[in-house]
Image (tube, rainbow, N blue to C red; front, side, top):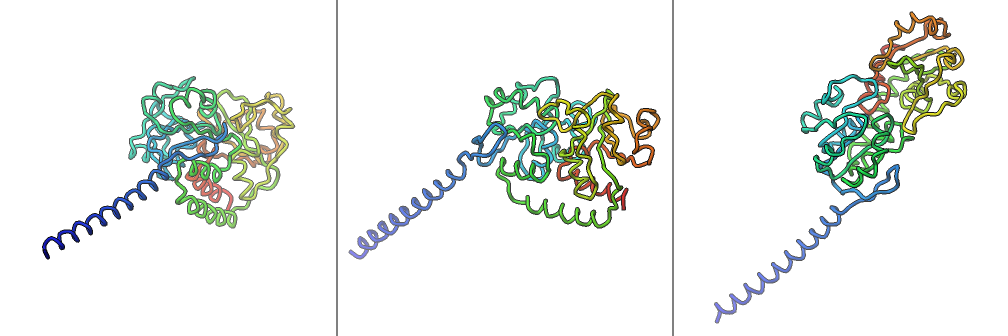
Length: 329
């Protein structure tokens, strides 16, 4: 009798334990399912549902790829192109080439049109494009085809500040941890730089030296001019008006204008020059009578920055601050 009662009690206890375990597992499963469900995030095309934890991201703007590595997101393929930075086919920019190698990131083939077949072959669960530049415009133009492959989020063209780009991408890939730290690191470095930098006095413009030799200037709201303003330079905010408000691509952060207008548009006493691939250096421009006659060249207030500074992300903005401190302290 004692044995039968003990066995019954044991069976009852086991049944209760099993029921408790099932309840716990069901609750955990429900929580995991909720966490794994799609999330709605902002995009230039309106809110879009994306995976809660994307594992196969394709990024179609090289200017955005560095952020994703900083956020420890998984990038299966990335467009290697950065404005004015020459690289061989399939070669990634030095700023994040090592990260790409570690993750086994594939280079998106560059061309006049986006290689949709290559992108589809990567089996992405999230595609990120948009932002500034030619590759950004390509992703905008191919948005419908890209969306048929995977959820496609486009960075708004007006989001030029690197902190805002970082926050946007962190929300997109659900990787908020570390964002505040990165921004705090930058703010500390910015404060140190401002304490050391003695900005050149007078209105400042930022010249984009390109292969075609057509005069182009970054608009004041572009990333690099905004950084210069942060450290104390005074931007010439009238360049577009002086150039006749020329039309520009939606994703462009610069304007181009006729060489006949150079003396009218670039009349500020301070000039930064960013030579892009095939563009002329400051010394080469100085040998051109058209540029040598400008107030900035006459006053010897022309300063050169590398192409990597043109659209700085977190990594390159820190490097650019170092360059500015070195030159203007």
